[in-house]
Image 1 (cartoon, rainbow, N blue to C red):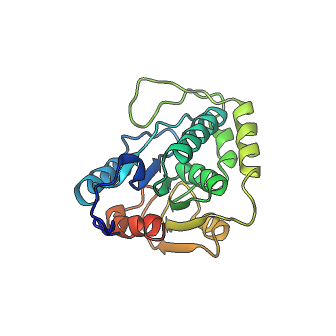
Image 2: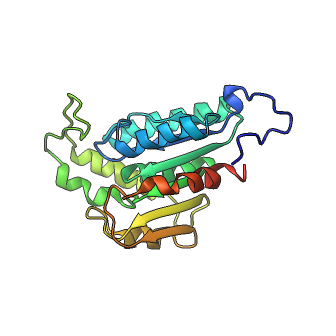
Length: 214
C-alpha cells in the first residue's frame, strides 16, 4: 500500500487512516514480541496506519463483549479501512469479528476450536506469559461460553482471510486451520513453531492484503 495513495496528498485525519487491530493469543498481551515487532515496523514504514492492540481477557464472555464493543465503536466512528491480525487465540477472535463486520483478517497459527484445549486449564491458577501481576482461573462456564462463540461462526466463511501457519507449531495442529480456512489465501511453511518464526518477512504483504483493496 502506497503511503501517498491519496491523490490530493492531503494528510488523512486519524479516523480516515487505515486501522490495524492486532489480537494477541491466550495469556499473552500487547507486549508480545510479534505485536511489538509489527507496531514498530508500521511506525517506521507505514506511519499512516493506526495500530490498536487491546489486552484481551482470557474469559471468553468478557473478551467477546469488550472486542465486540470496540469494533462496533470503530465501525461507527472510523470511515477508514479496518483490518485484523490475530495470533493463536487472537486468530479465533479475528475470525469471530471478521464474520460479524465483513473485515479482512490475517491469521497467524490460529486456534480454530479453543474450547477443545480450554478444559485443560479449568481450575488452575493461570499467569500471563507477559509477566503481569495477575492470576486467572477458568471455570467450566467459560468453556461453555467459548463453545457458544464457536458455534456462532458459520461453516461457510464470508470474510477474507490469509492463513499464515507453520507445520512445526508445537501447540496447535496446523492441519485444522488449513482445513477450516480452505478456499482462503494460505501460506503454510515447513518447520517453525507456534510463535511463527521470521514473521517480519510477511509484514509488507500483510499490509497489502489488509488495505490494498479497501
